[in-house]
Structure formats: structure tokens, C-alpha cells
Amino acid sequence: MQHRTYLQIPGPTNIPESILQTMHRPAINHRGGEFAELLRANIEGLQRIMQTKNDVLIFPGSGSGGLEAAVVNVLSPGDKVVAFNMGVFSDRFGVIARNFGAEVTTIDVEWGQAVTAGQLREVLAPDTAHTYKAILITHNETATCVTTELASIRAMLDELGHPAMFMVDAVSSLAINDLPTDELRIDVLVSASQKGLMLPGGLAIIAVSKKAWEAHKTATMPKWYWNFTAVKNRSAVGQMPYTPAISLFFGLRESLRLLEEEGLPNVLARHASNADAVRRGVQELGLELLVKNPAEQSNAVTAVMLPEGVAYEDLARSMEEMGVVIGGGLQRLEGKIFRIGHLGMLHMADVEVILGVLREALERLGWDGVATA
Ligand SMILES: Cc1ncc(COP(=O)(O)O)c(C=O)c1O
Image 1 (cartoon, rainbow, N blue to C red):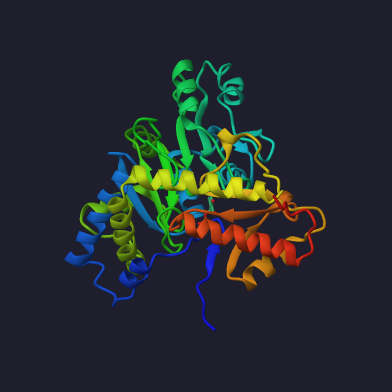
Image 2 (image 1 turned 45 degrees about the horizontal axis):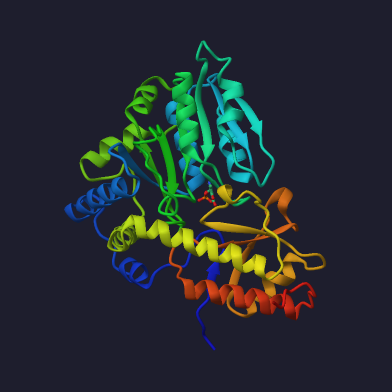
């Protein structure tokens, strides 16, 4: 019997029916007027959702490709940057920079905690000669389900008068958390299609500030596919430098329409209340969250400690049999946590289904800790 699956991994998300339908159409000429109009509408829509007047570039690629594009377009080998290891994705941002020859200072943060402005200040305050060119920050570390507050980091940079570029991975926070790109003066903001935008994977989306364009002029890390200038110049005439993922461009226009119809503030508020309900629900079941500080808990995804005696594979299989797909822990959190994605198309009734299925699975697995109150 066919039934609806609740895809509650931390992205890709459930895809709204209207997005699926709009992508189901013949290809069009990607060097014709229809594509030019589609590209223009999508760039303008993204600028509104990203709260920026900066150039927005769309690349065919995944979020990791976007991170690589960010690094190679504004940095040169030997440039000093600060990165964080607070989970898999923040680590990846730093590794990419290191692999392309940047001199990376990595600040280790306990997995499950956010980056603080104070940690960064310790590195940047003594750097009065301004040798650090950039800081690489993951807004929402999807692997640990931790959100780092960006405003205090911007304030600290301003207070120090440090000109390092503010480079932010917003793959799992765009259209989920408030992200006032221009107000925070984010120089390079990277996102992707498969999270808050509710599309399949395949588009990397990058907003580039004037300061980042200046850095780009002299940046010497090698690049071809990811070249900002090539994409900007072709976008200006309604094209891409190569064959774009046309279906995703149709899907993106519908995604932006849906987000704007609901209204960005309402989208963000819905994510906050769904996340809150998931966190309360799992705790009411007697489970423990990985992220203890409420101010750092992600509105996109929640990490739950696997209870004693319950293996992730068994829990995931049992829930999937009932129609709910969850995610596991990555790297050092493998076998320790499971993750419930609550990003994208999700309403309170869905949250109740997810929590009900979780409870049923735990009972079927014989976990005797299910709270009965
Ligand atoms: C915060 C963050 N950054 C980067 C990535 C990498 O994106 P992709 O898997 O699309 O390459 C992800 C993927 O989940 C992510 O959550």
C-alpha cells in the first residue's frame, strides 16, 4: 500500500507538491528569453529571502560546492583564516580552505555547543596587524544541531575594527533562521537548495558583498567551474557559463513564491514553534537533547541522545516502517544521537505524527524509559 513518507532527515526535505509539479516539464533553451526571465526572477527572489542587495550567484552544485566556491574566489594560498570545528560541516569549511593553501587557525568547540564571540576575540584581538583575511562560520551546524548567533560575532569584529571577511555557511539556516545578510554585513553567504528552500539538492546559492568582490579581484586560488566572475557576467545577460539545472530553476521560482506567499517572518516563526514542539515532545518522552543551551538549539533539526540499549539502526528502521525517516549521528556522534529534521514544509500536525511514531518505535523496541505521564 502506498503511503506518504515523512522525510525528517536534516535535508533534503519533503518537497511541496506544487514544486514537484512545476519541475515536471520539458526542458527549455537555457540561452533563450524564458530562461533569462527565470534567472532574473530567482535572483531577485533570493535577494529578498537572503535580505541582501548584494549580488546573488547560483551555481549548479551542492552546498559543499558552494563552500569551495566561497573559499577559492576570495582567498589566495597563504592567506590566514579562522575556522571552527564544532561539527562535520564547520570542519569541512576549514578543510576546504586548508586544501587550497590557506593558513587555517582552527578553533575547536565541543560538539553540541555554539561558537562564541569571545573565542574568536582571543584569536583576533592580538591580530592588530590584521593578518587574518577571513573568518569561516557555520550558522547552523547541522551535524550537532547547534545555531551560532551571528550578531554578536559581527559586533565583536566591529568593536575590534577587524576587517576580516565574514564568510557564513547558511546551508541549513536560510529561510529557517533570520539571516539579515546586509545588516550583519556578511561578505560571502553560502546556501543550497535542499533545506529551507524545500527543493531537491543541486543548487549552490551565494551572496557576495562589495568587499568580497574586491578580494576576488586579487584572489589567486585556482578555479574554473566556480569562478564568481564568470557566473556574474553570464547572469547579467540571462545565462549561465554552462548548462544550468533548469528544472531546479523552475522549482526555485515556485519555492520563492511559496515562501513569499506565507511571508518570511511567518516562515521563520513556524520553524521556531515546530522546533520548540519537537524539543518539548522528545523531552516529554523521557529523552535527552544533545544541545543543552536553549539559545543554541537549532530551528532546523534536533539532536536527541540515543537512549540506553536502543541502537540507531533499529530505531530508524522501526520508524521508517511506520513512514517516518530520521537521520543518524555523523562521525564522532555516530551511534550516540539521532536527528529529527523539522525544516521546510512542516506543520504542527506533522510534528505530532513524528513524535507519535517515535514513541511507538521506542515502545516496540522495548525501551522501558518511555515516560507515561
Ligand atoms: C551546514 C551545512 N553545510 C554544508 C553542507 C553540505 O551541503 P551538501 O551536502 O549539499 O554538499 C550541509 C549539508 O547538510 C550542511 O548542513
